[in-house]
Length: 197
Image (cartoon, rainbow, N blue to C red; front, side, top):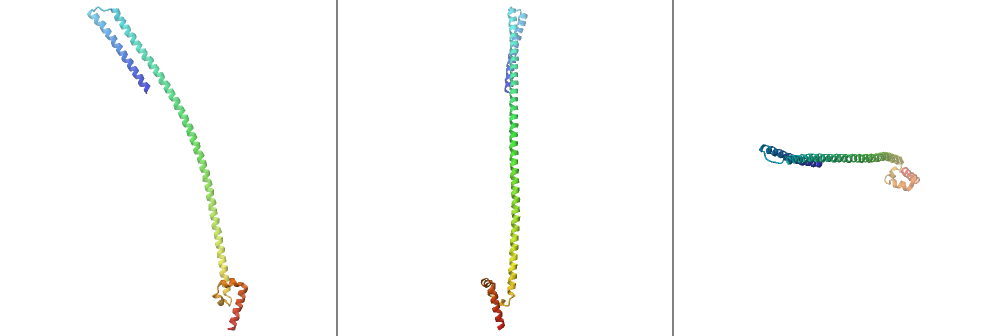
């Protein structure tokens, strides 16, 4: 844009000079016409030389304007070509940068997928552990329930003995201390007491 503006200014100056020279030529022609009309005594050869000189100046200015225009046109073409090369390099660099960024994103995606797979496997293992723990707890609770039922059955069997009244206020502590042999002796003692009654 700056080169075009400079070119336009130079052309405008050349046109101005051309117009000025043309005006001078017209003035000379007018003077020659007036001189002929008024029969003034002037040197016709000098007027012709001035006219030829003016024509040469006009031609020189036109040639200079043409050369200047051609020179600026070449410079503009060179700048356009140079800008095109820069634009092509910029596009190639941008494309390469985009490809690098895409590869990095793909790598991150693969890493995230592996991490997700590992987390999913860990979650399944944790769920299996929870299921196994619940099964173990259920088994322990079933065992505890079975032991309680066995203990209650044993207590019922103990209460069936004739000496149950004697042991009612003693509780299982005496049974533990005496053992089952001592318990049999204590029951026999209770039967003897009942017979005496």
